[in-house]
Length: 235
Image (tube, rainbow, N blue to C red; front, side, top):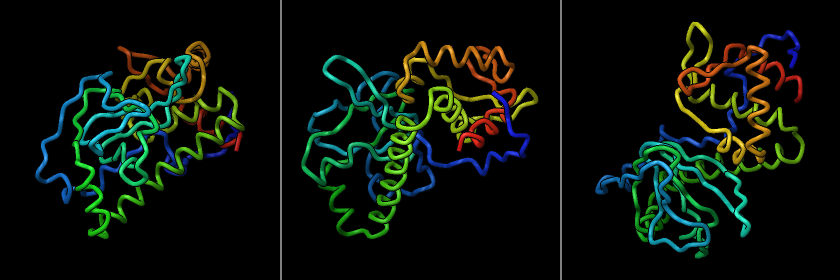
């Protein structure tokens, strides 16, 4: 991996991320009388093709939205972070949930009755506007995912995912950017459409080049400018 030598700015990097977060939106109009339900890591919240009585809003933690085939192959659509609704399409079109929701970390989630959710859409213009904004974030994320799978190689996909993790979940230290969340190579593979082995090989290559390292299970991006330069050169 070689950079162009151009100055790269993290803030200039694409904000279209597979980690969808809307923690800045006030959803209290629909949650004020509710107590969130706790889900442990890897606990399923709802299944693909199931019909649920609720719409779900992430209060804390991260929820992974997966689709899977009859043969057991999985693909992660996106990861819902704080302030993100999941299962919100079913009350609108009357169809089952299109994916499975599973807690990627210990999480707290509001279970909102479908009738209340629809009432807020019909009567509360701010709620409907905020929901449309959240729909926009998800659509842009899914379109970007299609673009990645269609046009970008495996190395680019992993580097792009790392760039988003840095922008959203990293602390700048004297060694570089330390991610404050852990991920497995299988999880990265499901998100990027790659095998666990492919992700492991790319992470190993980045490590051997001194671009990143692992410390107590956490990844530190030591030379993030090289990753940004590589991604910018590939645009």
